Length: 117
Image (cartoon, rainbow, N blue to C red; front, side, top):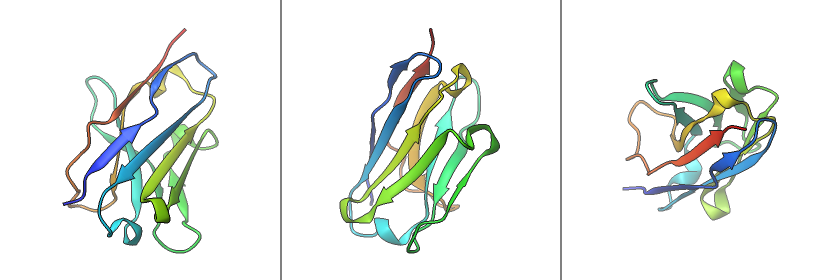
């Protein structure tokens, strides 16, 4: 079973930036499309960014983060990243990574991102 460990969250003012990291155990990481998800209080978990496993790693973003967030991956390090710029209060949530498949790996603990002045 793959274990996922997210890090890099914190408290940031509106307009600020954060870089999240997600380290995955195991050797199968590189063959899966990976995604960053977030869950705000009282809301369902949503997929905000995804990156394919193929060479070059094509990316997709939910509309609310397009132009502000950038997902990337380093398969040699079994790590996926989320660079978040121009953060807004509505980006406040716990952020998780996981493969983008109907059957997910067990969720990690997530990393809290709070955008507030």
